[in-house]
Amino acid sequence: MSCAERRDVLLVNPGGPGGSGLPYAVAKRAKLPEGVRRSFDVIGFDPRGVGQSTPVGCGPMGGLFDSPGAGPVPVGPVAERAYLASLREMAGDCAAGAGSALPYLSTEQTARDMDAIRAALGEEETNFLGVSYGSYLGAAYAARFPHRTGRMVLDSVVGPWDWYDFDVVQSRALLRQRDTFFAWAAAHPDRFGLGSTPEAVRRAYTRARDGLVARPVDGFGPGEFDRAVYRALGRTERWAGLADGLHTYLRDGHPDGLRPTTAFGGPASRNYEAANRIAKCADTPAPTPHRIVADIRRTRNLDPQPVLTGMEASVCAYWHHRPTRRTQLGSPEAPPLLLVASAHDPVTPVEGARQLRRLLPGSRLVTLENDYSHGVFTSRGNACVDDAAAAYLVDGAVPRTDVRCAGPGLPAVR
Image (cartoon, rainbow, N blue to C red; front, side, top):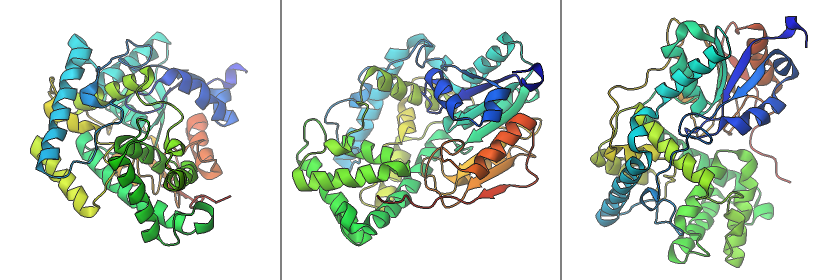
């Protein structure tokens, strides 16, 4: 590489909160367009409390890692009280696990750490690629250090809401995504054997879940089922595996096809789940227990069997350290950033990107239309998205207007 080709460093964050940036930097660099690889040194880091940066733990987390886990959707006053009690226990477990570090594990502190990395590397500005929660972290850095903000691609954008509000928005988006999944599976009845109408596929899904409520199999119950569904709905390449897993369970009674390849409850996932909740509760105000129950009831009125796996910020109702102010995102003094979103991403719904864009004057939004997955830049193989982001990173080329790219639609069936 010649000196003329070199363009500083590019920090990266994979999301979470709680994701490790060290292995991610290696994996992400391999996917980046050649021009970006030639222009940047890609630098990953573990945010404080994550991975190799003094990993935090919350012990049993109020029974989160029990196998089989308790039903994650409380129905009726008794179950609702038990649900709130588990949140209280989880908050206590996190306070005990984090100890005196609890007030210092936050997105704002991580943004300050990013600036320390910048200074240590001798760079004048921070260039950054953040995905999912990484977009929130990037926007927080731009708010705190607007004059040190370089080129930032914020992919699969977390909206500028309080974390609990974000979780509620996500839970409703998951209902829409699951309906889309039901219709998609129904369009291929010979392949998946779940029925030829969305209603029939929904009944098959409900039978599977009800069966695991009544009789968990080898530690796999409704909590594990909902985690598998949550994981699959966010990435369309996992839909066929979910449909096949449902069919196999209904036919043979074995849920192995629904189990994730990485066991939940191992050291990495325990650290992730702890760091996730600790950061969320440090960033924004907490909900009240009354609101948590009211929102669960509202969501169940929309669908009697919602997926509440992503409602991590509910635990903040009982948190032992309350933030003095909410994390600030974006700044009119920051340079234009590039936001990237999938039109039907249920994990970080596109309306969040549109709202964050308003806090970043001059910034542009690249939307992958007719797409239903989480993670876009170099993840979906879309040349329109990848070229726009690469031109921005390498040459600083900010699109004149927002960009709409043609997406792939629903996954093909083989």
